[in-house]
Length: 111
Length: 116
Image 1 (tube, chains in turn orange, cyan):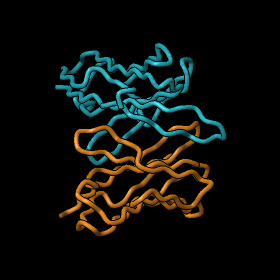
Image 2 (cartoon, one colour):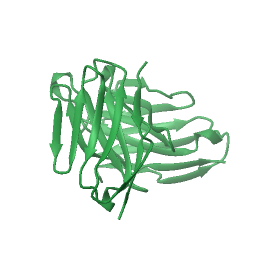
Image 3 (cartoon, each protein chain N blue to C red):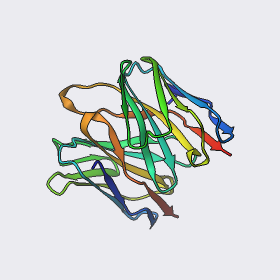
Image 4 (spheres, rainbow over the protein chains, first blue to last red):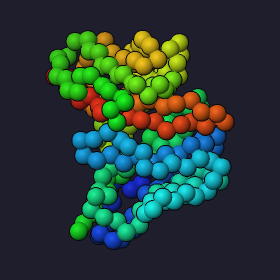
């Protein structure tokens, strides 16, 4: 079936440390993998995305890696700051162009 | 993102009532989506539409129906609301791009629905 698994469900780090969130997807034909950040009471907003024709993408402190063979992709946040505290969602595209989302990771960055 | 709006923002209703949630966008996108968010379950796709004449069921369409009145408007209806439909509902839009890739989805502010 069409499925995206996300781990961990909660993650607590000290300010300045790195955070890694991992996702796996079920369909080898998936070709688009966005990551969204949702702050408390707000809408999800795209922070970075990657397409299947590249293996890694970086934007300042945020990077995403994709392993198509293993069907998994990861979000890496370096030098975490308290304002990085939020819920993060991964997603993968499936047949017809729809997105299926992971269950979310609640990241807490402690000062 | 003010380009995607949802009404109402909050709604409390009773079991058995018919409810309509509305979504409008000024982004000029062809594609529109309805999601439901529950704690610990992420965002689950209810219905999606790639143009006015194209409506597709998502992961959890039972108990819901939709109408794409125009390119810019996509409504979600609960014909007979039940308590387990209490959730946060998001509308989203995306553009159509070449190459068979899916494009970025932009979310509305959400509608918090409570069914008593």
